Length: 436
Image (cartoon, rainbow, N blue to C red):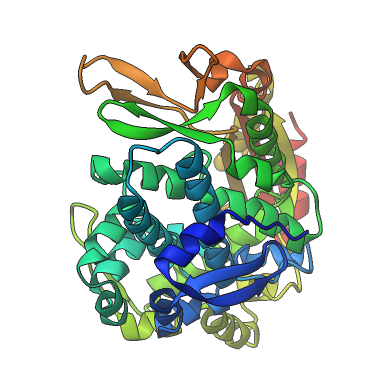
């Protein structure tokens, strides 16, 4: 499953790559001296001990890969997208400017997940409250001395590329790292599918990386898709849709996420988990205990779980896969009648003597191909939908939802509706929801 991009080497040589890592997807991932120094910092090495897919390995046993290898993969994908873009579209940008932009892009790609907590997304809600791992990543890039000493004056710029508040000059780099068709998704779809042993997220990456163009809109460059390449983007989006339902949103995986969330909330409430981060009233990270964070990984949490298992802690028992939450209602619904049925079930449970988030759990998620957001046009002040833009042969730009019947149909919002029961409450919950 090796994919290579020979043209990339032209640009990689200009930024001074010297080191290469073996990778099952791409063959080699090339790195510069500075990138290797970042990788060798304790806080980056920590990502080797943070699983990419949390406890998905309890569903797909070979899903043991880490945020470390994913981060390297995003560097490769971001490079392939950018170099393909520059090769075909960005002729107005000088080679020197392109080289500088590529260096900044690769730093941002390498560090985009540096702020992830143990078990990745599964623990954010329990431990971060009003901020996200992206906020933590930006704080680390600007304040963790071993990384700041390597990036020097570029540290604030690299951090900003991960933010929606990035300067117009670097907005296209932000899109490549954190957009609807970004390098992050490009890697994790292939990598997660490969390690899970499934095909849900598979797509043609070589063709995909060469599908992008750029147009100046509202005085800054934005990614666009050429009309002739629409099929590969459709394939990518549908692959992500199926992957999302069958891997991160798998019903068994979701049950372990819920258990982990409750377990960590209890540890935090009891004061058994150190407060390692401070957040002000405006939702800004103001400090982070770097020494603690360097050690705060999946293994750290599993040590707590193992100790609590010996004390007959229910959640520890589940998290060591000695039991699991029982999924008693599972529906992917877009029709109001199914949503109404789900709400009635939830109301019955909430009116019973059962305790929510202990005896029963409610899990809902929106399932869409990609997000569309509204923002104001800088010149006219009118609102316009920021979507994936397709450039037709005549140069006209059109939203992909208006262009592609496939995308329009599949991207109709659906909700994943689930009800879980604790192992000892299965029959009681089942009886209540079966009354409808």
